[in-house]
Image (cartoon, rainbow over all chains, first blue to last red; front, top):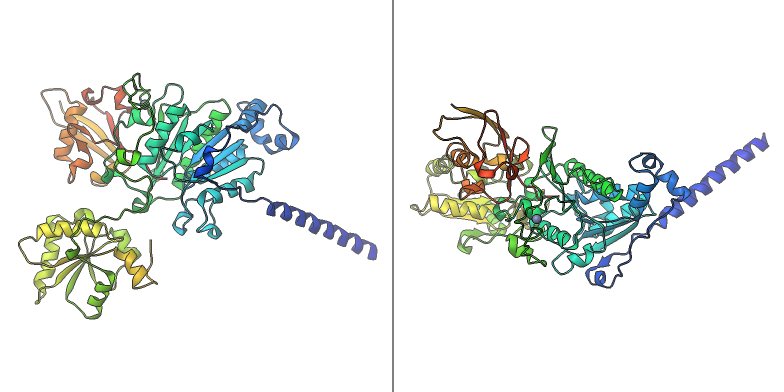
Length: 449
Length: 99
Ligand SMILES: [Zn+2]
């Protein structure tokens, strides 16, 4: 009786000891040291060692992909010797880098200038609640390293620009465009052509995603397809347009797949082909694209672009997806949230026009009955008539106050309304900083989205 | 003879066209063949409600919109000169930049 109890206890002790060993090992996985901008120029051109043999641990670990005849030992050795630079550790960069790590890519570089925010977590799935405020590149590198400690992960905490892009890209075999803005997309494209690296490009917005591989085996580059940048007012970022997390998740996974196929020597499926994914309709569509364009100023027969340029200037847009602060209105037509709060307190007679979309109206609204006219309808006859009606039912002439989420659209709306009501002496103003300013300065319990 | 074709919009281009991704349209009888070059101004006049500059620049689509004819890049099909045929499917994709 005593003996069996003794052996049970011993067994339990052994299990606990093993568990402690395992946890200790986990703790030793440190976040890889972050590389800052100044450091990328002093790094040597060393590459992940070219592997000639898989060890037993690797054979076990990668066995399920190793037995695929398309991969095999040769393919796995190529994967382990390859280096991939993932630019952007966000909605695309998170899923792609973690699958690259899982597959055993030799070296993964992760570039991001940003820190983790709460609004990132629904799609940038390598960052956790505890990582809010932490450097994104470090957070993603830590996650990759935790999954596969044999992979070398290098986080670069920097904004990719014309003076550092080539230096960085030259150190890698394959580049993933997981960025969120037009200027950086042109920069990455040009740098990949100049350094002759394949560029696996993904993008996503709302329910849709796009994927293609540039600069591979006679295929086009980004400029072959889009010689001129889009007008800045036609570009929507995830913060304004919204995005369902699993959509960049899907595209990011496919970017990893294309990169792994290139690394393994299989070759990509989306060179000179674009994938259009519509998550709302559930459709994947393959589009046949033009080949390399002889007239392309970058990769054509007589290139005029032989070095990196100023991409923010070229695109007329900043190289991030941060909210812009418009200043189009004369200060005389603007009030602060404090002034508006005073108007509410004193019961000042006014019409509040909220120019956000219907969905946004459902999220939150100011404590005063508004007229909702979405910004794209502000100048229409019907909208003006709605305001007119409200003006006429009031005995004393009210003023008009326009509000939006951040104080950009409200300025455009006031400009339009001033034109529409130019023959009256109507007092029209917008609230500086919109609902974000209201939440910051007046009602800290007000939701921010 | 009038031509029945399908016009599709994606990547946000549908927001300019009544937020509808798919439009079955009939192009009226015309002396000359319908081409993409004549389709674009027809679309601007009959289908676009507001802000045509977000769809067209000059006589062609604005930068950042890719045109596909039956799932092929229009560059492979003659761009503005392509002669439209019955049941063609023409897609206008606004390029996405987010991630
Ligand atoms: Zn090109």
